[in-house]
Length: 259
Image (cartoon, one colour):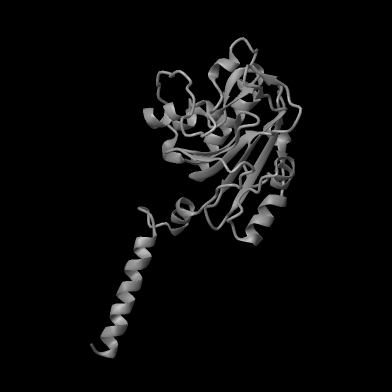
C-alpha cells in the first residue's frame, strides 16, 4: 500500500469512527449524555438497578435515599394506563417497605420517580409502583407543590430535549415514622436536574419543605452543595471536576425558564 493510500484509509477510518460515535441525529453531545455515568454516591452500598431507573435504598429509613433516571423528550406521553397495586421491590436485598405501612397513616404513597414520567410503556409505568420508589407525603404536598415541580420537570425535559433527574427525601435521625416497619417521614424533599447538552451545561436543584405551599418554584432553588451537605451524598462525582464544582456551587436559576 502506498503512502497516499495509507493516508486515505486512515481518513476513511476516522470518518467512520466519528459517525459511529454519534447518535441517530449525528449529535455527539446527545451521545455523551446517554453514555455518561451520572449516578451519585451511595451512603448505604445498596444500589438497585431497574430497567428504567436506579436507586440507592436506605434500610434504616425504609426508602430510597435517591432515585436517578434520564428523562427524554420522546418519553413524555399523555396516555391513560390503569394504575397497578404497589408491591415490594424484590431487588432490595433487605426488603423494601410493605405498602401496608401507609394504611391509615394519614400519608400518601408519594412517588420519587413520578409515574407520569414513565407512561411511554406499561412496563416502565408499572416499575414506578415498587415500594422502593415511594416515600410518605402529606396529600397537600404530594398533589400540590411536589406535583407542580414534577410537571415543570417534564416541561423542561421537552424544552431541553433530555435531563438527568435525581430525587429523594432528606433522611436524618429522629424523623417521625409510620407503620410497623417505621418508615421515616422526611421533613424536606429534593430534586436535582442536569442538562448536559453541550455547549450549555447547566443544573438546578430544589429543596422543598414537606408541607403545603403556594410559593413559586424558583423560591425553593438551592445549590447542589447545600443538598450534599444535608445528605452526605456526592452528586455527579464522575463529571470533570471543573464542571462539577461550577454546577454544584451555583444556585442561579436564570438559565432555566420558569414560565
